[in-house]
Image (cartoon, rainbow, N blue to C red):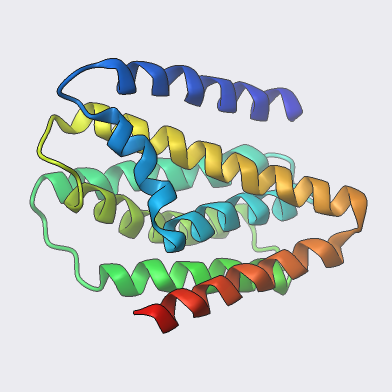
Length: 191
């Protein structure tokens, strides 16, 4: 399992470099975009923490939950670049922060297919938002870059969950879920 996570993180970093390096693709903006919105950052770290929590009972969740998020995020981005209108994007993004934080806080362990659907649904909103906020450019490098950054953030959340469990126990992971929800409340208050 650790080898698979390490391989995914390494692949993300390797793929991000070419996306950043090509002039005209502005992959740097794509890579930085997930870090510029606290709501995006909290949701992606929340996905990673929940994937860790789920993987304590079903190891494949460590890969399948993040992969579902990334795949559906790419679909949401494609819809945005195609000009398809998606309603309630900001509400969906904010809901993802609260729900993911709540799932971690309550230590909810849904069956793997259901967990993949939950994160996938929210990922569409995140991918769409990234696309409609993109600078004018070729979408390929931009999408690849923000997917790489997203994978890194999910990996950070997964690692944070692992570390919290190892140092303190499940109560620490649950507390981190509460912090994600509190961060969502701050984002909501700032709007």
